[in-house]
Image 1 (cartoon, rainbow, N blue to C red):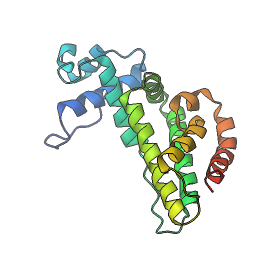
Image 2: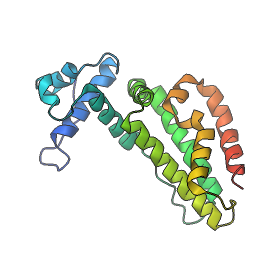
Image 3: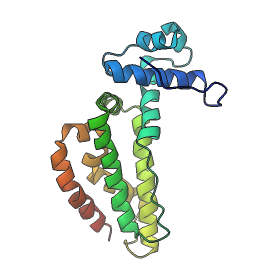
Length: 200
């Protein structure tokens, strides 16, 4: 099995990245529940004990792999439309885009999606970072909507938390994977529109 290419001399070419890339390759081949640290070490031509010098535990290796996947495959930034989109429309697109990316991972990269579910169940740091990043994006848009009078004055962190909680079925891997996708696709726009209307 070929590993993703690593360019020698690149600043990102360090031992941590090599372990993450090898772990991603092993996870895609064997699945998160069957992949072992020894499998990852074998891909790197190292002993499994040497990997523990970089990561103290198997759980931390899995969490680092999941964090890398969130960042590189599920990364999402606020749309930059030069003011053409309202805060409400940007808020809808933010939630729907997160949902689409997760559905895409579920159907096209199921082993890695399984890893996201695993780390979410364990409340791993990668999942918490993903959740906090989403809350931050929502908070920015709520603040922008208040500034343009689209939304009522409110406690922004509380509004962001409530908004995300009301739509958890669209962005939490545990629920996205457990809910029939056809149901989510049909209802996602209505769910998001309903939640946005609550901010007005």
